[in-house]
Image (cartoon, rainbow, N blue to C red; front, side, top):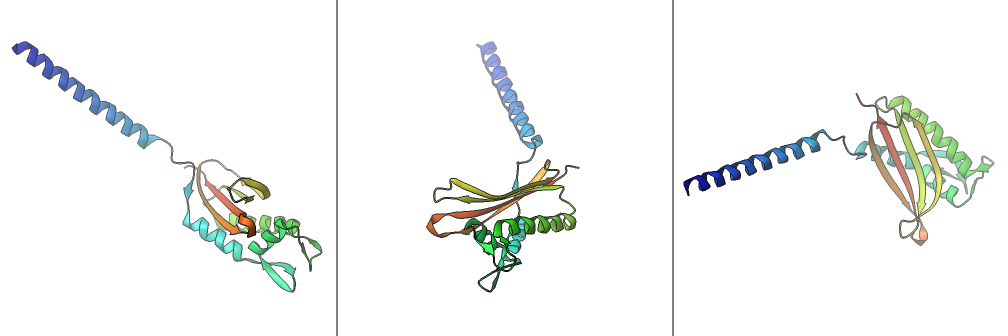
Length: 167
């Protein structure tokens, strides 16, 4: 009887040791795993909000449109009355120059992806108004999204993802 009790205690001890080792292995795997694909960034949310309020040279009804108004005008197929070009064409050139400036001043970022999409009431994608991928888009990324609500339950989504090279 004495031997069986000792064997049971040994087996119990071995099981406890095995469980502790498995737990430590799981902990180490989770700690050494690469970071999440994208981290939400307050700084990039502020950047998108500022971009939306940026006043452009596109005029409609004697009023200069801000960037969010220009995006809506592009979606609706309107022209910039004072420039003699379509709002989508002007939007693309304006965004290209804005992001060129952003990339020059934000030296920690090596690349970005910026998309403007339209979604319906059920968040189903309806259209892509603008899409741009520039620079080295690998490594750690931060992102932000802003929405412009339209009538009829549709939304225009501004989605920005900026990448930092791993060091």
